[in-house]
Image (cartoon, rainbow, N blue to C red; front, side, top):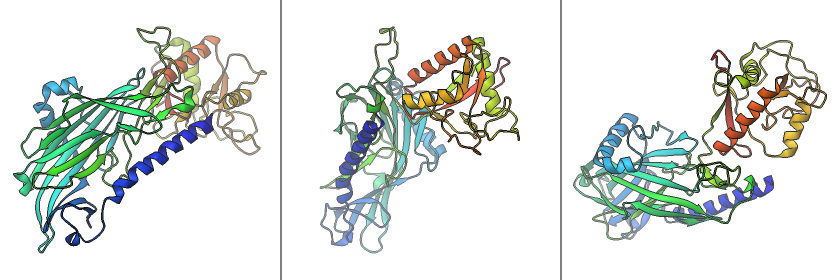
Length: 451
């Protein structure tokens, strides 16, 4: 099953590479002064340009957002579109908190956003080769997934932050298209919801653009976790900029969160057909298709304060995450670290440790259980990390001289049952499938947290 998933992911990667190559080929590296009017090329600054006259060209390149200035521009744009912003769930604290070098922000398990700055520059191609004008355009995007549906809203907000020279008095026509409208090994469809048009005018002092699509995945039903569909690479917008004085080709680029060179992190998402989730309409949990932002790493809590039944398990995990690091850790094959001592690796600890990863391979789960909780141990044996984690007892080689990075403890049956229910609900609610990462926090009965 793992092979099928890898083949599917490789197929998506190949299609992405093929689909991206024509755009790269349109940029002519020749001296722009020798090109015909209307031709597109890349200049020495790395900008994409179109030669609109014998002696001038309009170019566009990426720029970093200044967080404070970007927030001011965002607030102005939201104020201009207050009613639409509320319907698009952008009012309040939906600002995308990007930082220099970080254009994509993973807000939650179901939300991801991006913020990107672009600068349009009108350049003279003859001496003195000066800049005739600039326009700074800010582009934000939000994707809000649904755990029980393969449809999601995609919202884009575009504002002009400033302009100089010729571009301070000119408008630029912008055409927006969702990148979802492709057929890779699956069909992704985007429907314009508000407004219906895809064509807008950008100008200094002009209104901001707030555009929303209802996107969704239409494909043959997948069966099993190995057929999860990665959306990354099919998320974002295609933007066509056409200045009023440009007669021929517009400047065409894509904003998928990765920046002008495409080397950064992209907007992320994934749909799968794994565990069924109960809903008000389907209390038995018959809906099992949904989408999440799989790059966001969620936290599962073993909260002994709120759920006394799970307190013994919480104590076990707490001891292994923050207990005193003993010097008498045995190097005996198959033996766990003594009680009360921290494991060599702080599994599940977000602050300085390493996440755990779910495994759905039965052989790996059974191997973890055979080592940590064999039949010779009590039936209420609690293993850490859990048997459903790739980093369980079988993760390290069972060889002499290698400290073992796991532990077991006898707990009441009710504690084991409570932990099993907690993990099952956590996996389902967050659509945690094979090799997905997660953090674990233990909370003792007195409220003390492991991290």
